[in-house]
Length: 445
Image (cartoon, rainbow, N blue to C red; front, side):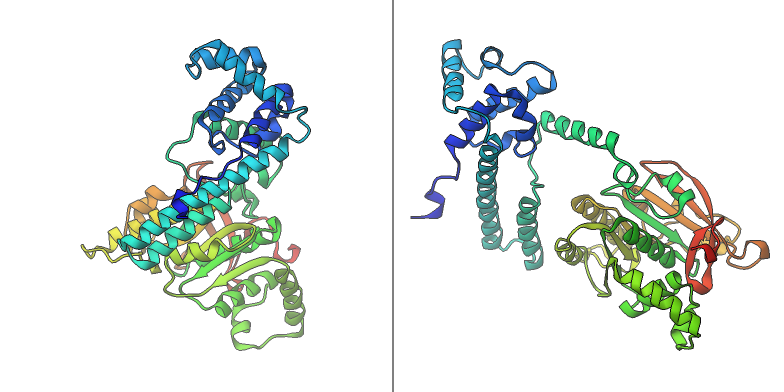
């Protein structure tokens, strides 16, 4: 028998039992609502009834036979009260108690997942048969469809406002009780900067821009290490310019406060070995993953990142070294960078984690040595500014005009959709490729 002729998976008994459980025990609604949504029901009449219950819950109205019948008739779900009352009574009679309500809901959810897998498989077959796109893109789309289902993050054409309200209500309740990173996003580990940023929010694209040699790579590595150590989440770093070993050497130099030159030459003193042993021990306990593939695309990054458990942060060094998925017919690098920045924003939202990427600034900033960087200085495309949730510039007395500021960096928060703007002064220890708060003494860390 052809698979397309088979009936879609669903359980009439489970759907009826879920609805009956809520009618006889409205208190179980909250537990059920954490498992299933309106669209998880297969039968339209069940979606209507559950949706009505949803509305009642958020309007603080009682869920019972009388209110349900009245609402279903008023909204045109049933033409007459007798038919509505008959079916609601059936739902009540079909189940003796609500003790197993969550089990019934899980069955409804599982059947819904199977239906979505069938729909995704059908779409994948159509894409493959049509041969209408590059094989890499077809494979990526197929993987994305299945991944979204597996992560309970399925995308729909439309989402009813009641579902969004419920999610928002739960999130606000969680934030009210949460502390620290749970409430405001990931902390950078730099107190003064965190006060301005109000955390790195999920799905945020963060751009770190600076002239060559100012320390944007080191700054991002410092953030990545701080976040990995404190949050215990997985942090993935894509290095398009340096090898894994070069990148790790920088991290060790910063964490162990060993001069980077010593790590390059191997001329370490006994104290350096002790410091490195302590730093390496701490770093080995983190979940930092590094990929130094030089020609990785956003599609390639996405495929790798989907397999990382407990992902908390992605760092890319750096944006202008990336290649777009397709060559543009107009040959414009500006438009190509625009495609990349949009792709990175979509990637951050899809993974629901902050994504930090370094960015070069235009050469004009090098000619105007006295001027602080501005949003218009982001190299190659104004779309970087548009797509970014945060833009952070690093600026220091690179040319040594003021000896008192030789080790001081201005961290300029030029754009921040979820927090404040301003300039935070930080200390820069070039020999260790390390940033720290001005008031922090390295010996105290």
